[in-house]
Image 1: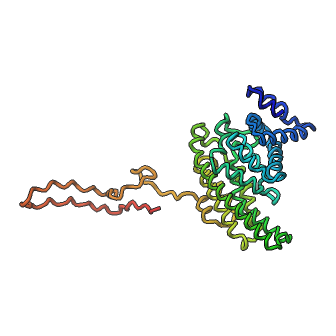
Image 2: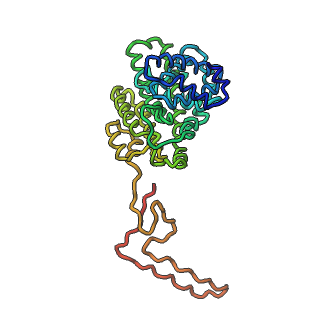
Image 3: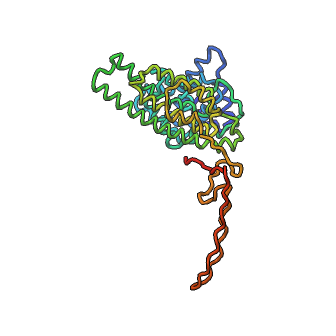
Length: 377
């Protein structure tokens, strides 16, 4: 089967046959289809069969998310869990099929939502995702940039980009790993000093990866305004849906309450800092469509965080003068409004004779005229 799809020269025929074979039908045969599909895509990754990976990318985009995450889990089991060292094989498909990589990232971020210790992404998977995105942050926009898009997206399918899932990873990671460590200590799993040191080192490596990932996500968000404008979707399509921000904030609040704030203050602070940065950049770029009032309502129960407080409060709006456009700062040498400018001085006569200089015009005092003061920001 892998050879057939590889040798088929017409992409349209290949896509139609792939869809006919593996599209879920809502019957008992779907389980068999998924098992066969998992083996096919796993083989295509191993032998780098690009046409098969491109078919899989289209399938992931057009299939309900419950099936997409099943395929993602099968690939993670094959390359991150079952065979040690095989992760490099999966890592190398980045240059062969970026479109498949984008859909794979979207699938695994939907699968591993950090809601429990079992749903924290494996370290090998995290390393792959971060290396792909850090090398080229535009990778996660491939599906969005190459797909005809309507303002209203279908419900129950993968999102156009993995942005929401990646933001969830970055924001929840400090709290989720703290919860995992707390559970291990309470269960006595880390009584050995060597085991403790090993776990601490692995967690430190993961935290560095999440920091790199967070930087890449912010860089992608900053690119979005131009792309949304080009597609005439600016202000119409939220690639970071507000409906997904609400449960994220609720999960952060629950985790913060679950962990002892006295023992997890650094983790809570880091999670809230990342949330604030992601919200601010997403709103500024048009990826998140909501108002500051919406954010204030949603974030009201979160622990206090200075950066988040600045974001939900918004910029301080200064009263603008009628004669000046909004946001315009008068030049430092511009005379205050209401005062006449200095008259031009006549040219001085040649030396040595120095006739008396003409007097400067007297500036009129206008009582009750306020000086146009604007605080320095």
